Length: 268
Image (cartoon, rainbow, N blue to C red):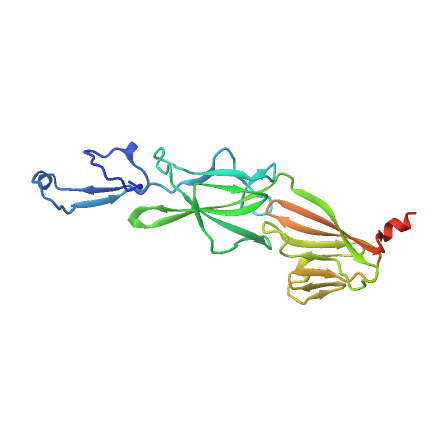
């Protein structure tokens, strides 16, 4: 069987079949002759129709922005363990105990891409926060061919639009060179789609290449920067698209005078 256990059976029954099991057939007369070494007169590997990939206790649904990606809603961002199951179509428990291959992915420009060469073989995985994973299994089929069974799964937030806590950037009153910016690689599971400031906004398709300039926006390496000029404060938001919605990262830059914010002084 798939665990390397060798056993003798007199008859083959459907209920005993499982993936990766191999049957060796011998001439019965030669077995009775107590021959020390016997050559099988036939060898058969068991296969079935390729399975479905499922996760125990969860329903996989299509993501709204990309129907090639399935989704599980994570109510909390805490670490959660998920158990994978290969759901058979014909023979009960045929794939019971089989492991799957797990690879981390990144989401860029509406497509899921392999993040790196690291592959994990397991029957479960713990996910902290939000991630996109490729879950795959090579299923033996007729003529010793293999069928690839694969699901790309987004472990994402329940809400289609998530606004993260606003971050404040403090700069010196003498700093006239600071430029509000958004990072392309802020999240593995979302890509930078749009940047909005108090005065302007831009979609990233207008800055397709490094060094591109559009009005007061510039793409520089991993960042999109906005030339705001010498202002005391400015709000901006970085908008990211996930396979199922948006993430809004709000930012605020404040110039400091001494140990106080300019905006606090103005309110006195």
